[in-house]
Length: 217
Image 1 (cartoon, one colour):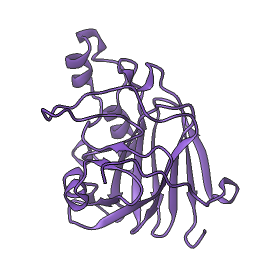
Image 2 (spheres, rainbow, N blue to C red; image 1 turned 90 degrees about the vertical axis):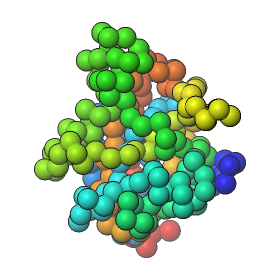
Image 3 (spheres, rainbow, N blue to C red; image 1 turned 135 degrees about the vertical axis):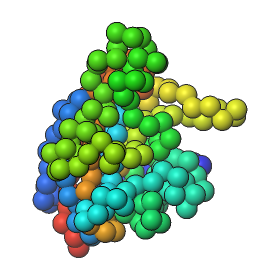
C-alpha cells in the first residue's frame, strides 16, 4: 500500500450530528462511538492535524504507530488503514481519503523540539504536546497518557537512508480524511500551531471536524 488511495465519501455534511471548526493552534477532545464516522477537513490546505486515539472506557489502550505499521506493512496511512491499539485491537478504520497519505512517524512538536530544531528562543512557542496536555487534563488524564500520534495531512517522507524529512504538504484546501470507529473511542487533536516548519507554509490554519451517527450512509 505504497501509493495514495483516493476515495471520496458518500456522506453529506448536512446530516452530521457534530460539525465545528477548530482554529489553528487549538486542542480538542471528543468521544466517537462505535459505528460513528469521523471526518477531518483540511480547510485551507497543508495543515497538520496531530491526532491521538484512545479506548473511550480505558485510556491505557491507545493508538499504537508500531502495531498499526506492523499490521498493514506500510508506514503511511490512507483508505483501508486499520488504526490499531497497543493491545492489537482496531480502534478506527480509514474509509475515505481525498489527500491519500498521512504520517504516523514524525511525532508531535514540543517545547524541546522547538528549541532543538529551530532556536533556543523558540522553546516557549505554542506546541502540539502542550495542546494534547490541555485537552487530556480537561478529561482528568495526565502527561503520561500522551502517546504516539498520527499527523493527518502532513508530508514526512523517509529517505533511502531511513531518515525522516519534513517537506511541503501534499494536501490542498478542502481535502479530507474520514474514519469509522470500530469501538467507542476518544479522539484528541492538536491543530498544529507550528510556525517554523515548511509543511504548512509557515501559516497554521483551521480544520473542520464532523461526526455522523452509526448506520448513516
